[in-house]
Length: 137
Ligand SMILES: [Zn+2]
Image (cartoon, rainbow, N blue to C red; front, side, top):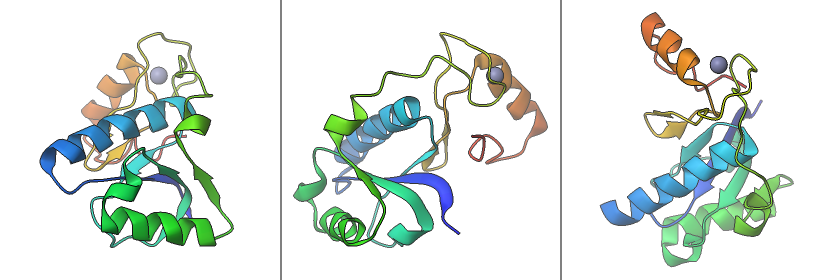
């Protein structure tokens, strides 16, 4: 079964490129309201993911081209920036369901969580369960 996570594919060849890609993945998690993992190599099986979003730089780096082409060959959701920015940023916590203007994704390792409100972030931190937020949907 695919995880309910979107894989974000783009140029991650330098730390600056990776920072840009990570920032783009924030928008993916925020707008699609689904956890977004940043692909930092080609060692991912796109079939493990519920979908793939291609960043504007995905054609600039061989590993991201490989993943992007693999995703397009599969019968799966493949989004691009045009689709992504047709969604509004989420103003609703994906954890408790409350409306909160400050709700935003949280970076856990290489994966942005869905948008969560500050209260839920504090609660999750108190539980000390790494990844607890990442599976919130
Ligand atoms: Zn919340």
